[in-house]
Length: 278
Image (cartoon, rainbow, N blue to C red; front, side):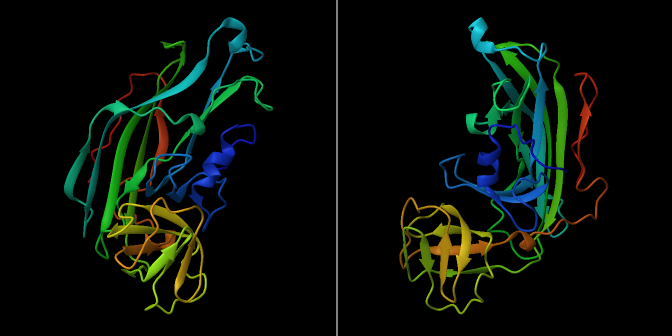
């Protein structure tokens, strides 16, 4: 909960991938994230924004004066995804892996802006590939992470253990079809008669045909045309099969113990974390 700190130098980059309905783009918490590949890797998913702050001592420390650099580092410890009508099928384990944030998701300079000795990182772990799920599917994510700071490749902080647990159900409206054409920033389906701006803000995904695999933010729509926030990498044509969703397509569902819990569990590096919650 809450909002990103004003002095986080990567704040604008975070807001650039947050679809702002129903919360402001600087607000942490449940969001639909949709990147065009220029700020972060190209994908579209639902997750929770999480900001991490490292406090440097002394507060006036300037890394460049000591020929070094600070960096917030993150690893995925373990996790699992569940889905299906009851959210407990087709387990998809998350294997341990490095998960350090992109440079555009970090502010590594403790003296930038009004930081006064603080560095930042943010992450938005969540559920990917939600477009293709059948209606009334429940998807759950449980993931454990560790977060720490390095100085010239050496760890210089405690490891913070944290986790995310998310549970969502595909119940809201969605629209799909085959495009009749497109331009650099549009996709047109002449067979539709949408209500103006019913799909904005939202996300469009091309699942087949020309431009397959692309995700883009929907910023407005007319009766037949979606306008996106950044150029297509490959312009859709009459072979492009698409789907559009908004955040209200996937409301949280709390029908399981600890659904929608998201918290720091330990900062001592030893407390066990619990993630295997079907």
